[in-house]
Image 1 (tube, rainbow, N blue to C red):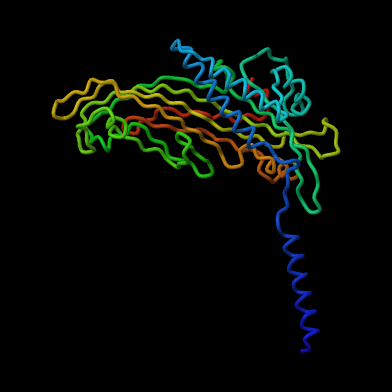
Image 2: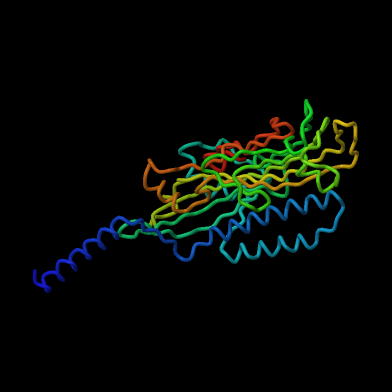
Length: 335
């Protein structure tokens, strides 16, 4: 075969391969640079600071520095184009999108949820086509009672003797498709025992120390966040927007303590052993713009990403609580 013909065939093959790759590779872009992840981090930080303010106020501590941090976070959110909406503004803006599914009997007068909204432009497909995604996020407001806030206190006690390294105090087993953070560190499970929490308080304690009696008290605050994604074609009017994707995530602040426990040899440790844990759980694709566009384009695409409950277990693996079981379809379901 002549070299010239060989070069032509190789060149044709390369073009064919490149064309195939271009046609089959997923194409996705957000314009301008998507700020959703940055906004989500700021909102999460704002929620944590709000929790700290509430806690410090209850203990009579100074909160001015924390309040200044809230002001700075709000300033950054505004600079990123995030709107803070009242419940009435949410219903006025998004009611038309929901009314075909669930008409409203009356506009509620609630003021116990923080609502945040911002817009992104997403380009996807071949050829690229633009879509507008409006995100509406609902989160706990100033620790006010709402469908997003769950609080409680539970006391659990062991029923038989255990070694300190084997007596469970806090357990969680992760679910497939859910991402977990324990004190900001990625994890798939929690398995804390008496030794883990008490070793810093009792120098003589070992994993083999037999524990006869432990009575643990747990106080939990669970904060759910719900993301509603409304999508339209770039050139369409806002009246064409559809709520195509809803997702939930949960943050739990847990304080536990066992004020006394007795070892098998009769030794009693009257000092209070306490611990604090922060657990965050979010399903895959939480607050994801591309998933929302795909759901807008196809009835077969994922349209919901609910956490469907975070299960926590305490002493001896006994059920402590299940939080964040909500499955809202529209904003009005939270009010």
